[in-house]
Amino acid sequence: MRVALVTGASRGIGAAIAERFAQEGVQVVGASRTPFESDRGIECASADVSSPAEVEQLVQNVVQRHGRLDVVVNNAAIEHEGTVVETSPEEWDQVMAVNLRSVFLCAKYAIPHLSRTHGVIINVASVDGLWAEPSLAAYCAAKGGVVALTRAIAIDHGRDGIRCMCICPSYVGTDMLEQFYDAQPDPAAARAGAAALHPLGRISTPAEVAALAVWLSSDDASFATGQAYVLDGGLTAGRAYAGEGFTE
Image (cartoon, rainbow, N blue to C red):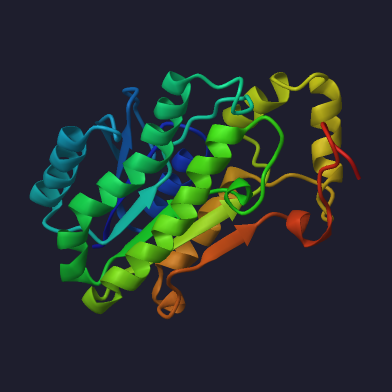
């Protein structure tokens, strides 16, 4: 049985990915800084994935308990709304620690085990790692770092049989998106306008991101590595922001 470690698994995209892997017959260990429980066949673990000691112990525990590690999904993330001027050094460091440092740490400690199983690393980035939205300076920088780190891992460790990709969703119906809406000058207008930004006329669901993660981890995607897979309902194909707020 394949074994997957999913970070940020207590809610949103992480929970959807963990549940979908479990449905596919994968033994899933879901990690979160906040203790949580699951009745979906997911083994729950508590860890601060920005801490080297806690990540190293988390990975060791998974391998000791299950004898192997096949897939790591780095999904832990937080968001801070603000321009560079509006972002404090402490807020910047916190976003970088959770959104980018955690990807580095999980890869660092998992790769020796993944090399034994020709394993897969899937990093959840964002379209904000490929372009920028207003007042999300730290978040955009961190997600851009995730995209770049994904490429570095892929070229450095492909010789070990390890594949590494990232998923770049646009707007996904999660608590973090609600936080972003609430930080806008007119939250109601932000919610109404988000769907219209996408040619498909809606935002995505965590389950849709999970479906892509499962495919990327499968043998059907055995030649996929080093790429950012944009899942955005056509958002970045031809629409953009003008000034502040949403435009069509």
